[in-house]
Length: 131
Picture 1 (cartoon, rainbow, N blue to C red):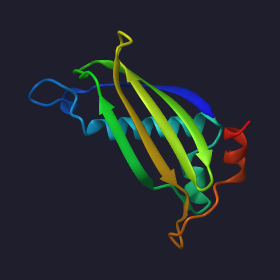
Picture 2: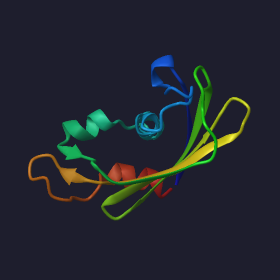
Picture 3: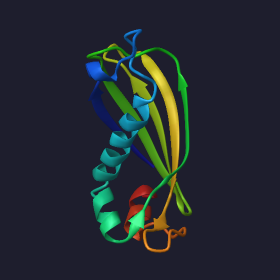
Picture 4: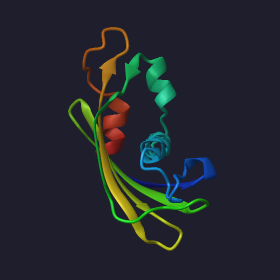
């Protein structure tokens, strides 16, 4: 399992009429955290795509505890692990005061870009996540 941290800042355009960070933005924040978690392993999504591997999201769940506001600096703590043809990302989002904003999880599956059928993950990725 890999644990990583990614920092994002809430932009004005990402807030709603209540001044809260709009709930739909968190999916994009978690995508940033996933890409950076893979990069922390010395790999990249682009490299996997260049090898013919795609990783669509199979499942996404989130539970909100507190709102984030414009200009808040959010730290997303990500735990990444793999099992079979699926890779899991568990997230905890904290504001600059270390207040827990939400918890979320995404499950992605490895598929062939050509056939669109499930495939085994790259051996190097499995090795790095099971060390």
